[in-house]
Length: 185
Image 1 (cartoon, helix red, strand yellow):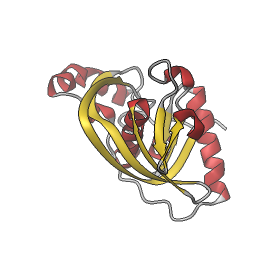
Image 2 (cartoon, helix red, strand yellow):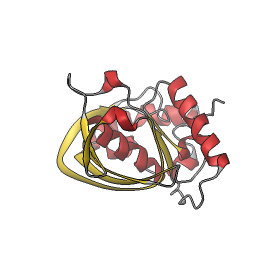
Image 3 (cartoon, helix red, strand yellow):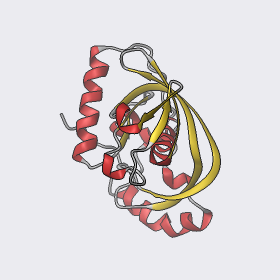
Image 4 (cartoon, helix red, strand yellow):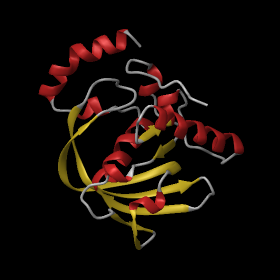
């Protein structure tokens, strides 16, 4: 079932999300609907606040054609090197992220900030502890698009949008577009 993606200006996108206490069949069904919605809108990540639920739940699926370079991107999963594709799609609750490394500028967009893209500087690597829907814990150390996507989607859980992380000059440039977007949500 396709879900309604909340747009810039909706207060649900600015609230801090509550931890998920229990993994239930309803939560697993929600994840299926979130994945279906993400694919239908051509996204690579979707956080629960974007569909109006302030819970710490995220789905990510980075297609192979979005991976950087010609070789499959390798990441550290529970201490072992694995191709990133081996863990996709990812659905997790209550993430703990530790971004690190050099700041890296990259153009981001968002399903909740339709039609706007801007350069955002973020650390280029992430250590993450993610609880999967079977209750197991996945510990990742990654870079590239997965590191960026983890940071972007987990920002949603704390009420941040990528437009909050752009330069001051970019904020001035985007202000009219954002006001218009908020007025049409």
